[in-house]
Length: 417
Image (cartoon, rainbow, N blue to C red; front, side, top):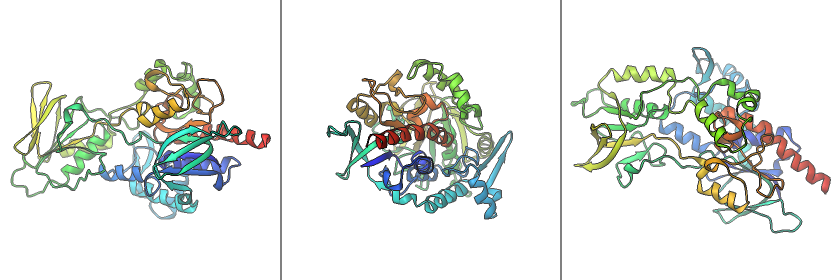
């Protein structure tokens, strides 16, 4: 039996397994990271490639290593300090290349790949054994059964994203997070639907592919179509949300899983915003004939003569050979797997499916008030960790409390043995 199985091998799962090995009595044989991809952080890498991200939004102290200044030391030792990019009023941020190289360095140095089991967890239930009623049984799509004392759901958004109903049934409309999306796919012109950082990145990378010698500049242009005026923000939320004192004072004063907590999160997050440096580049390219910015909410879409025609709520319309959606992720609280686990294990949910968590350990509370052995990290933990729960800083804060909760269960098991 494992002591802890982490479902998800992204930034959160990869970071957490290191903290568990460093800060708890757990051995390597006690832990496992289960993820369907062929390598750790594969989903993050794919998304970064899809929108041609060139730098992270997070600061250089936020990465998958456990030493805050590890990435900076890595850069300095290799003469890559110029890849720590400056920005007004905020600490430097790493280039994507530097971040991924350091990620690979950490994974190799700690042999984390050996802790990764390539599979998708399809269900979680309690152990049938009368002596192990608190333990959990995970079943995978490979037909494997894994028994564990504790489990952490660190699955990000679970691969689900927002796809507007008006886009249904039209093959020429693709989402930037579709596995099949390729910015290199030839197209005479394109519309990118969205108003946040990903939409801006995709619009720019498609605009970069417009031939300089295009005979018809209008036909070759990229349109960024946003429902709202483009807004800027350097990071996803006020940096004070990184600190537990701020989180406890402003979020934990409301009941766990409550609408009040959801309201605090919504007001604190800088959703659908663009970093100022990226916005400046967007405006610069928009001055050329390769990129234009329009505002409007799409009412309907249809195919006309090999093109996709979008009709807007304001009465306008636009068309292109290719339409790319950058419309964000679907709420993870309503993910079918999450809902299935909650029902099977009788776990409590609050407002719009928000898990009711222990603010001290991130354990997902059981309806019968028995101790829970299911923990969460990432977007699922926003109700306790705060508006930065889903990003790299959130992984660090979640690990602060997860490691304590998991260690306490391991200690109790040893004492009872």
